[in-house]
Length: 481
Image (cartoon, helix red, strand yellow):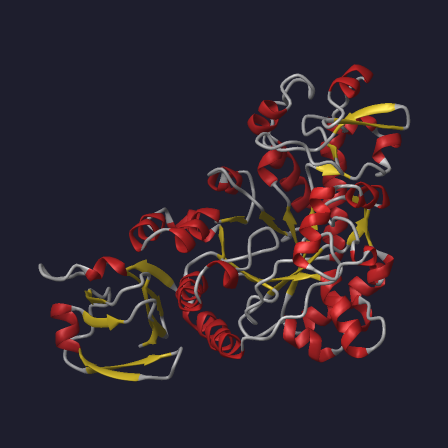
């Protein structure tokens, strides 16, 4: 199952350059640094932000007081040299020369492949930079405006080369000031999207598609009802993805997705879609809410991406206590579907640098947390094989703390595992009915892969009553049977 490690490429290379006392590009990363990027249990690396950033977009960012304030909050000793522009304001899908160019990326991919890891890169389907070549060469691929639009709503439109274009947006927020809106209903844009993704498929094993739901016919039509023209009969992604796969078979498609559109995007061809609902429930709700979410169809769950943070969300260490983070991490790591870990999460970083920055503040490493993740990731890789099945904890009339527990099993021909998580700030006890019908008549040894503790249990009791568990607040077991 896919386990992704997201790396902020520019910040990461900057940190390596500082540590080594010399500039480091993707083609010059030491082997031990690649080893750290691909810890045991990770099989896919997302190098976020490798494409050419826009000088025009950078100029806009440098004039935006709101953005500058967020930069200073994350990096109190900010200098203008620390502001590189947004990696989602793409001028061209060519690897930035400062990062090592296409040759450096090819070497990075080879280093990852040597460690058994695939490479994922970004694709931004909804918008481009204001100095992207398409504004002059292919304006039909963009949403257009008029001089009257620009005069009436200068925050919604911009002028380039004597033409007026709409700024990129989603339907619920003001436009982004540094990007121009692509037209998902344009035939030539769809054709160009296929070509761009095929090109990315020459350089990587997968793509993470930014805000993928914005290109769906119904969403795009509601966002741009009077600007985009008539909707094509075929939706955007069902047009694009099969044509890319015809030329780059096996290219992994991962969607950043919200608004409960994950299932629809899976149906339209995506391998995995962000599971923001699980994120919200693990961080802000209770075990019953999580359990309800995990009752969804297994095919749907296999197509989700479970995470506790990424470059758009706050650092998890900054928003919940460490014991709750550990419990949530055990759940995320051992559920079906893909898993996404964010660089710095394992070390307990608390500051999320805006993606515009090329440097982040120094922070101390939380060594116990790093050791915990060092055990969890390889344990999860061992566990997630075979058939996943949720387990419903049972309690007693005078003790309903079983409601606080989450539990599931993984059953493979040569292995059995049981995961139990106390998703609460109070102690919890329960009996867990197990799905295995051959337990009777012998002893069974359970080894907790998180701490090495060993438990021997009678098979008759397990069959008749289930496994008794008692966990402290936010406690967890990952049992090998």
